[in-house]
Image (cartoon, rainbow, N blue to C red; front, side):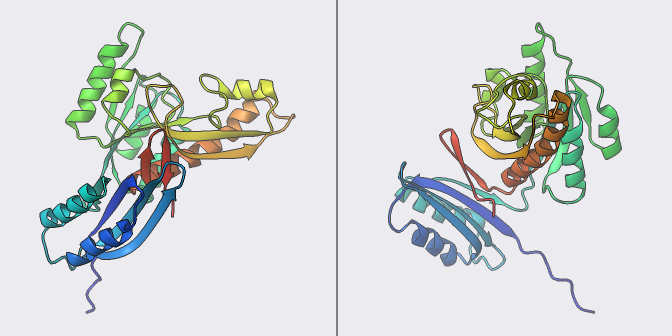
Length: 291
């Protein structure tokens, strides 16, 4: 019998630093020197900010040193070039929590994509401020936690949610139309680890009821934006956006219906790119190596 091919053990390295000569060569040399085989590499130089960004995915199968030594070699290069860097091994599967309220279209889309193998992570739990979507969690076999929120209980409930996420080792929190504004204290506990879907093409129509705002302006395009949540409402670094045509014949209900299709796909792409370590933050912008 022919033995089944084994899946190679891979890792992904993300780097960001001031641009300088020799960065690509130094990183390639340190990986080669430890026996790593580069599978693909993408890079970008921002000429305005004079910053360099790179994503390297490499095979560890023939590594002839241990991982501690490899990381030490990368660290030496990083110090030489004043580099921010992050290394993740593919075997370190991320744990994701999804926060929802009553809308289920983005939630269903993420759960179905995960079941189909499109999202490489463990969906550890669903967290909601309402009990309505618990049947969805039961259908997909995901734990469901309800934290009812009022004006008086908001901070206490958020603290309980944050403690749950930290206790369970959650790597990514996805706001799949979670209709609560998170406090700054909560967001600061999970920097660049909360992805929100906003149902407009930011920076247009920030805040509540963007489809109603779009209808009042008679827009010919409506969109959706996936971004990292920050303490500034709907102003976090944008990961992905898309639009769909609208016309004078569309009612608010038509815009909502069309917009939900865009919301699903935009959020799914942003989540997948984050899980695959394709996003590098630079201030309030992102560099996304989508391919």
